[in-house]
Image 1 (cartoon, rainbow, N blue to C red):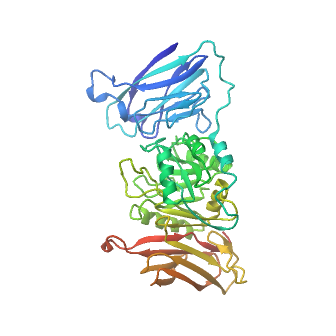
Image 2 (image 1 turned 90 degrees about the vertical axis):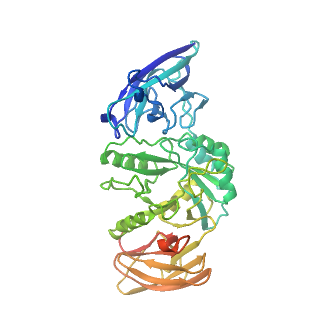
Image 3 (image 1 turned 135 degrees about the vertical axis):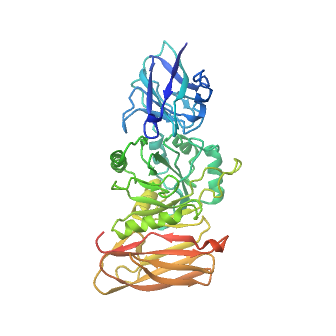
Length: 480
């Protein structure tokens, strides 16, 4: 048998953009499937008042819809909100699992209502088997834990320290992309990435596909892009969903604290894109996406913002991300692919999700245009023993008047310029006349400061100025 409900009402300008409307409905015992379908019905007296794709819908189960702790079951991500949930399957973006009896909530939001009101009309069908007992006690699937266990062996690693190339930011059909996960992973394999993080918007339903497709090469990692009013952020590798329904900076701070307590970094995404990061009062985030998609796409101000934090004594890790939303055979809506830019991480021992995230959190990271390079490594002889074991992200001791050697390796286009930046100035510049550079430079290391390396050159239209080909995180010294 099937129970049918129709939920109708209106959204007004006061509901957006930082508010959500929760419409309750009852799920009886023995429910086996919940199906939600949008209707064009709307208000018959206002033809322009109908809803369709203007409203984003989500679903919370009988565990409630409280911030952070609610029973999240999925989010439509701006797609036409027609979806289902069952114990053994769900529409991409939604989480399969037990259908508990009790009060569920349809969550509605809309990015913009200029004036008047927007009608909504949803039909909800609940399939019921009267012979089934209630599913309150059934365990929810935990693909996040399964994925972490599946890649814990690190079959991609060789047991020694080396640089691995990958992408920390990409999307699939589970949020706002037409490509299924299989097509994306096939492209990633052809591109030669060592690791790849799929980070769909505001959901973790893609983790099950990652578990299914995990073969060890490339290493598949899970994450979530949290798309909040006032900016986007990233969490990687944690068990469970991260809320996105923030209303103010205090809520963002709670998310930062919660993600760190659950073992993940909290990293700000594309902070100067069309949705700039405005929660400047929050503390404790560890990363910032300094390079998102092609360099000229809002990345120069992001680099300036990152250096602003560095110059004020904040150790914020710079990361990159393709923010890929398409691969062939889907229609190409952006010029870059997964791995463009490429985030290189230095991992000691086997390549696992944990070892990659540990390396990112430590700042053992440089970013380049793609998986073929350029390659840019900077190390320091921090102990003065000639071994150059200090990596980017590390902190050295400083002494008045101390001189320290820095070893730089570059492979990439000839004709670029390598510059070394400190808190207040460029402290070194090397013209890269050949495609390979392997040399040293000596700098004074005292007080509290840092040095980071950056390679710039011309590409495409020289009249538009230089672009960044590669950049590293800093090597620090003093008290940070």
